[in-house]
Image (cartoon, rainbow, N blue to C red; front, side, top):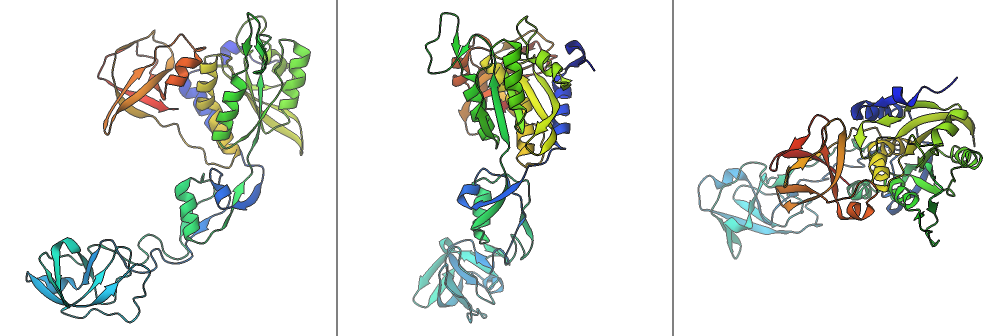
Length: 417
């Protein structure tokens, strides 16, 4: 069955993103492994993590001060007998606060029985065995109750969570020295084009070094995948097909170049010969309009399988943008993560933007400002081949397709790099 014509498969940005998310939501990771806790950073959790005891395991003081009975401070200043000091890590067994009594207590220390509040040290003055308190407290003030953060056995982290420093710390706090995580998906990266040469090659007058394979490999790693850079594919159908078939033996194939409408843009032709199913062959965005997404039924390591592929434009900025918009959610799903929607930040525009309406634009920009005064402005660039401009940018300004002009000072959507 012949592939549908490319014109019929050019989607709006929202439609193309929705197609990717729908397919990503049906993907599963290819296996699991156990790794040491520190090696689990950046990996996707394959097991639930639960509290092995109440957190905190005791009522915990959140301030340096005095553990008291709040009812003793109704008349101020109040003078209480100091029974001793409780430091973080010290046992509070057998320590009881009765009427008219207090314990000096440190932040993080267990609150003794009978005490129902901690008054901050700033409002106290100790003289020998007595403390004078000048300010009252409410019951529970400056105390985290036992089990307030989590009860023993309650879930803390769910499978599908990518482990950052907080997740690793939480796992460490419940005694997890090792973690069960999903295997990283194997992602083949294939750059095409007669004009592309290896990075260690002296390029000819009309040749360029292969930067796309390396930018994609970094993006694959950041998304949770394990990249494999394939040899550069020439604009020759037989060799291109050989390399595409090699790439389809991986969990995902990402190609760059050869997906436009030129005479030597052969990727779609080769994929059609392999009976590929195309979900879209373009998206109404800039940069990156000629982006392709589909899958091929092929023979993999475990028998017949459907391997997804992306054909990304060859211009470097287009390659990076379309990866973030479309390829990243598929890699994250193959790594075991739950599918999540694309989120944008918002900032005020520093300088006016004028563009031709009709495409959703993701334009390299610099987000700056201090604290809550965030501002964003476009980076001067020479189009989607301008890697130097991309290197200066730290985000993209998102321009809706219906907007041709955005005035300085307006709030605009921003996608971080």
